[in-house]
Length: 179
Image (cartoon, rainbow, N blue to C red; front, top):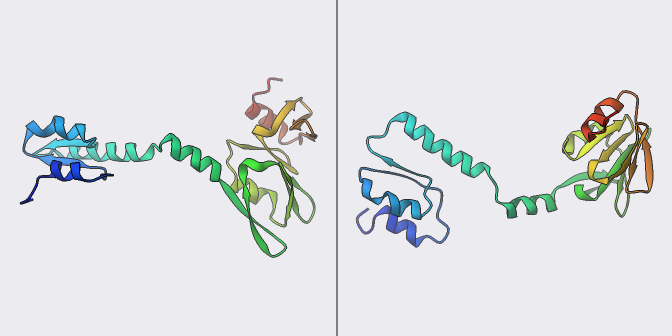
């Protein structure tokens, strides 16, 4: 670049992009790493070394910041249809989901939501780390479980839900209950 070099340009950018520097000059490496570059490659560049630098980029991009994670957790939601309208339901508000013949009730911290969507489809929408199927008719938030026996789980101290025979062993193991 005729007016300035790459490092000078990086210094002028408030939020610089992820950068891998390729150069024939070894002496600028300390200054480059002070600018938080991903890697500093000296020419001629071996293909394997380039791949390593690119993988560093993807590794760095794959690790979201703590702030981004907490923001994501706060905003996680699903959309469900009720009475011809689509409603946003925050996942953290869901205590358990109950399947009835023609519809499903989503029990929230502050009420109940009814939809015609089936429980298996809802289970696929929800994180398997946060929810567990304990019965063909019940999907529960693991965080909402306040008490557990070999026969039932208690949700927030207000509702006991039974284990289904085919779901019992897997659910108990997932929750960490030793029989």
